Length: 91
Image (tube, rainbow, N blue to C red; front, top):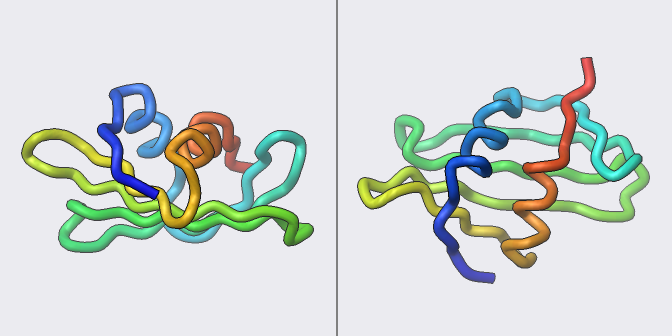
């Protein structure tokens, strides 16, 4: 678990996810996801769980003067990034 610089494509995909709680499709499964803001938008948290309880994701994104940083919670940067890049919010 370590923080990593967040590139523009990741931030664009993260910002496209709705604030609040929503359902999304990721790798063929339905997920329940919550995205929330703290510290005046300088910190954001995303937590998701597969509807069948088989998997979860949790991460923070910090908007720092030197650029955005992704800090996954007890998972790899790759897993957190793959979820954000691949999750599709359901209508």
